[in-house]
Amino acid sequence: MSEQQLSFQAEVSRLLDIVANALYSNKEIFLRELISNASDACDKLRYAAITMPELIAESPEFRIDLIVDAKAKTLTVADNGIGMNREDLVDNLGTIARSGTAAFMSELGSKEDGANLIGQFGVGFYSAFMVADRVEVESRKAGDGQGWRWTSDGKGAFAIGESDNAPARGTRIVLHIKGDQEEFLDPTRIRHVVKTYSDHIAIPIKLSETKKAVDGAEQDDGDGSINRASALWARPKSEITDEQYNEFYHHVGHGFDTPWLRLHFRAEGKIEYTGLLFVPSAKPFDLFHPDRKNHLKLYVRRVFITDDCPEILPHYLRFLRGVIDTEDLPLNISRELLQHNPMLAKIRAAICKRVIGELKKQAEKDPEGYGGFWDNFGPVLKEGIYEDQDHRDDLLALARFQVVGENGAIADKPTSLADYVARMKDGQEEIYYISGENPEALAKSPQLEGFTAKGVEVLVLSDPVDDFWLSMVPEFEGKPLKSVTRGDADLSKIAKGGGDSEEEEDNKADDSAPDVSALVAYVKLALKDQVKDVRSSERLTNSAVCLVAGEGDMDLHLERMLKQHKQLDQASQRVLEINPKHAMIQRLAARIGADGAGTELEDMAFLLLDQAKILEGEPLQDAAAFANRLSKVMEKGLA
Ligand code: ADP
Ligand code: MG
Image 1: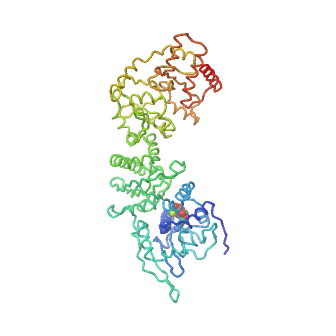
Image 2: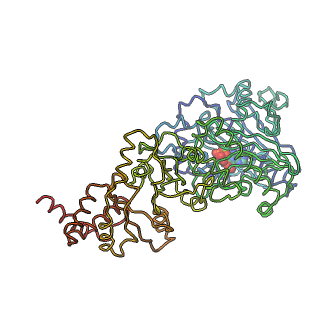
């Protein structure tokens, strides 16, 4: 029997180093991980056997065995599930294949303290090395003749070779327990650990002890299972504790936080199914990875079918984890049939409705918790506003937005659209927003000034998805959504908030804003086709100039984004707005009246446009010409 020595993937070695040396106090979770794998292996085989019943013909009952050998100081975890062939062993137990472990490693990248993270993420199979200094895995894939043996001390390498001793089917994992971890050779302790973490496992778990009798025979402790061995989601809610729910979430969802929200429901009637869904409280690191699978497992009458079933959930609910178990699909349903299955489409629609309804409830009941949820998953949920016409209004109502209020800063609390509308000023007909990448920078945009001065709130939209759904949502509750960087800002009809005397004075000043029409006409002439239009502005109070998109043109940020993604090759021209109340503008206007136009004034016209572009983060057409003009003006100023 030849054995081959192979190295672990470098990341695995690093992980094992942390795991083996971690002063982590909860080492007992290794058992949860191994039992979880054993249960998954049984689920997989049960599914495979639907089309190939011969795979389980010899022993149709699934089971997980825990065997303590106090004398040999080993704990064995054995299952009669799908098993692993040579390739599986090398791939699964030699690399980091699974998402939970990958999450652990990516989180670890930035931190030194791996031990704490082990509990948060779980490190799957490798956690065995927390309690064992040597691990032997013997496995035979269901239907295969050849069995395999994998062994390692967790220090950089593992050995793999053929085995004559592998189970008839499935996997036997023998842990050689470390000297200081002998508590895990105590059946009472093990029973307790299983009760704590693995009671929800639907496969019976049996515990037995090997006592080396004189004749070497094994002695069993009886064969009752030490867990409930029934599907957790099928049990009545009243019989399930929070801890059991959470452990189930860890097992099924590979999530290691405490879920924020749980939905356990049974639908009866035309379609029958049970759902146990969780919303995590922590944001998974791969939420925006394009190849991320959803974490909802599909069962049919308690038989695991697939954990890769995009049809059962819309993409924008991909943060959900858990199980859907239906009575109404055939067990031997194929991938192709799942894809266009009308039953599944109905279940999906019903899940959407239920989840959205529950989120709505939470938003009312627990605004703070909901705020945390929104921070984590809002950008994902917003994809639904774009994608899911049926639930667009519901999702809009669930959405929360940052908002710039009267003090010109982003408010601490995000707002819903309904609350925004409720706070709208007298005469305000539109919901104003500004979109872009950086919320702090957006809050300082000159285009906001006039709104802030009047106490009109402006939503700050800085998620990449915002521009997409905005294009689908012209209004909310009859109020049009309008970008403050687009079209005319008619703020004259909006009453100023408060109404104390100081503000009234301000209003008078507004009315007597100086006439800059000659300047506007002059600048327009000077800039020719560099701009679409030049006009006196209502939206500026501090800055001298800003750029906006013309009425009917695309919002500035949207246009920039489309250009970046090469979806648009021609930029539309901007409107240059001039602040008639700005001291510099007033002087310029006076100069026009006095001497007419010289080249000096023409330079200034260009400088107005260039500074508006700089404020907007748009490239200057001719940076050298800009520098030249600026120098000339500075030289004059210093003279
Ligand atoms: P995860 O369970 O999240 O995939 P683990 O580190 O726990 O990650 O296990 C890695 C992989 O090893 C599993 O995905 C599975 O393919 C394989 N594996 C582990 N234990 C068993 C087992 N008892 N039977 C069959 N395959 C197993
Ligand atoms: Mg696992």
